[in-house]
Image (cartoon, rainbow, N blue to C red; front, side, top):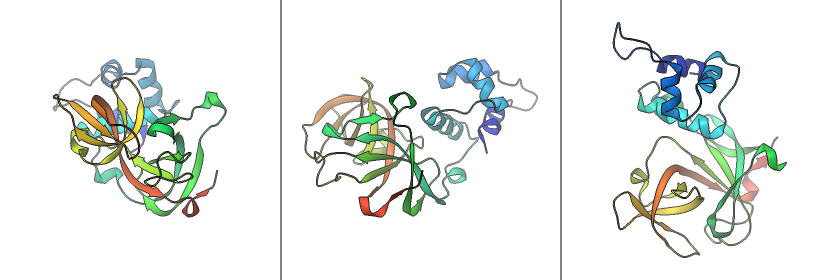
Length: 208
């Protein structure tokens, strides 16, 4: 399904003979403006990377998409959308900083919806080395689902990090474990993306 089809499916009545949901209702649940939903539905605008991830997770939650319906491992190219460096903190690329997004080819196929982060510097050695790329995917999992795993995450303070999730000391909070840095204790985690692969620099190629 494309974005238009997903929005139209989300607006269908929950029960036969029921009332169609409005664009405003969908917009409030996704945290975007009603005009944005209108543009997505008529095809005049596409969601950005983060909006698309949120829309995908929401559609899975509502039963419009299933994990298997968009989890076919057929793509060998992903976009580099940021860099991870000192302190395993992530810097997202944007159109405004002059960097833009680069497309890279991987040595094996990955699921649709994956993105890549380029490692910079030696602060994460030996786990992640300079020039390697970390391939991740946000697929609707919560932090609780991915306990004990290395993930890309956003803290309650809005900081994006590459960390291993451990259970925190209070409900809904997590300890964020680093390979070379201090433990970040009892943090709120608002968003997570599962790590799919770490690709050595000699195994991936820029293609656009």
